[in-house]
Image (cartoon, rainbow, N blue to C red; front, side):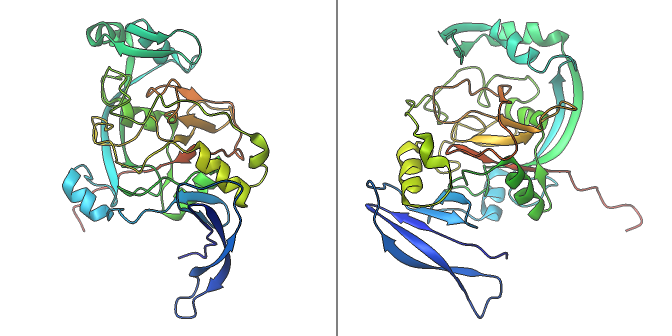
Length: 319
């Protein structure tokens, strides 16, 4: 295990940790807590990991093997992952969002047509008719069942950059998902707008919570009591897997809402860092929606990620 630097925030006060190495476990870093004042009460217990990433502390996370057995979707993938296979509806190379644009033609109940557009309900039959002309491509890979660190009942890591997410996946012999891999795991072979179908449902997924104004001055560094207090004030997410109905046809959870997720662009020669899924606020939050405006070193209070991997090759007949 690599060394970690941890800081915890508790209700009404923030505690800051300094690194202490355990002599019996080389490379493991413990946290010595030093109480410090907080500019405002803090609702959640936060831990900082490696001096960069933040996560709400949970005592109720489930071991991946237990989840795998209950879900039955692991297939030929590593523990905690879901095997994805089928044919994805694809678009031409000249445009990246014709599927999302085409889906708008099947919206039967708009919440708002102004950006970011939100449709409350899509007409499935109309969408199936409209999407018949789209080409298809085979897809087969593995994806984390939950947002990183991929534990039911655990909270996502946030304030992670694209480059850091890619490196964290590589540590597990995985990779950051491409935007197409992420989208297919969310929408399934019908290319449904939402992981749970055709109706936007804030009870099913953590979406459409009220927007809270952000003080950008807190985000110059990812440390300190002021920073923790601000991300705690802004936080409206939930533990991974808290909403059983926010599950795709393949069995992947929380693909819309909760936190934005880094993916790698599927478009050659453009910025690689692409965000998928939206977060808990009133944003598009559909399987095909993307945010392509941020560079590889950008981080923010609602950004996390999940990992993908190739499906293990079957053993040869000579083995």
